[in-house]
Length: 147
Image (cartoon, rainbow, N blue to C red; front, side, top):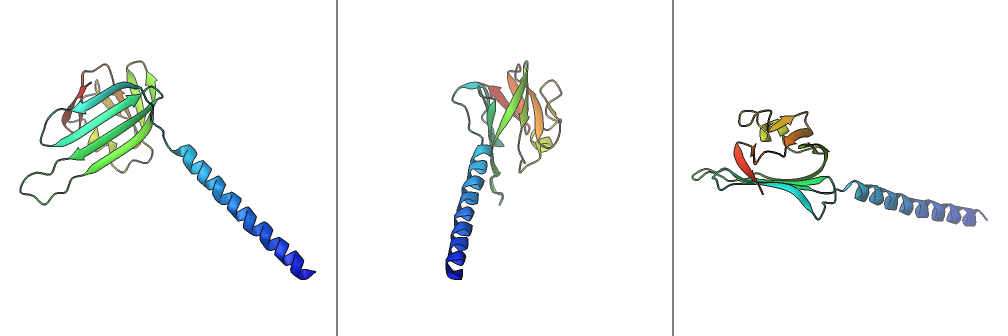
């Protein structure tokens, strides 16, 4: 009789562990950002020797930010590649982009040296507000044209 009780207890324990893993997977999938299909606005860098940059905002209030530095000739530099998805909220022409735990400094990418408060404002380490009424947006010192 004790063997039956132990076997039933083990089966219940094993089956409940499997359901926890499924729950964890579902919550992870829920936090993944799915980009929209229709772009609202996008900015792309012009030809330069510094970086290739694109910022695309979608109708479902998501965005995609891509950045690839161009190593300078005769150096051992390696390209820095950043690809981030996030969400944004609209306040007229101003969009507040929310980067969840970015692996870079927003203040470095959106450097006040190259643009003023009419272009963008870094709010904190995860949020930057951009003015989409502008035809160009300076990102990391590179002019990105509105498409």
